[in-house]
Image 1 (cartoon, helix red, strand yellow):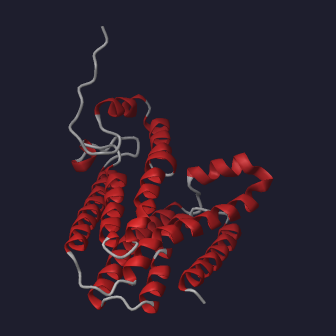
Image 2: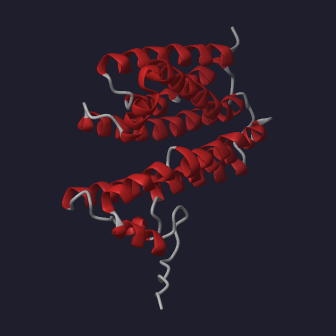
Image 3: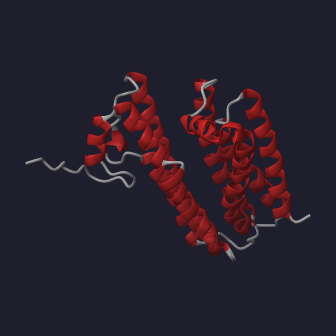
Length: 261
């Protein structure tokens, strides 16, 4: 069986099981951690099946594991601490879909299958490359590490802030002073780095969809929009003032709010 078909079928089966578990515990939030952890599955299959260079395969697996295990564990712990309360996004969808919820959530889980599969494709092409590591790959690895370390730092700064402050306070510590969503920005940097690394392999450049898809999701769908909506609902005018002075995505210097005449 073709390795791509095999990996897709395994992902589909995994997310069907995940949907069944979510149905049983009445909490769809688990899909967030699942999709982060799931990326490791096709990448392991690609590396085992293809005869890429050993050093490259070690780097590919390390990149995937560093991203998958860090983000997956962060999300899993967040879900565990909130349980049995479901994420606001999914509660709103339950209200909207009503009796169609189970069917639509099944579709949502399978959309995540497609998402994970598409994000795994750069690794597929890189795993087939048997040439020596090149300059472009080292550049990609550096960009990935900048993104991974930046996102880890942003998440740690937010976590430490929330431990010491009430949830309605606005975090403007460290990276959060320069961006309202530095964690999402550095997530985008991670995938740009992955693309640069994998584009050095034959046909790897075709996988430009991976960083573009991630940036679209972060800025238009599952990242910034629901986070902004939730923050405005919980923090009100204080967050609106934060919006006026602080970049939404790319870290930048504070703006001076315009005074009303």
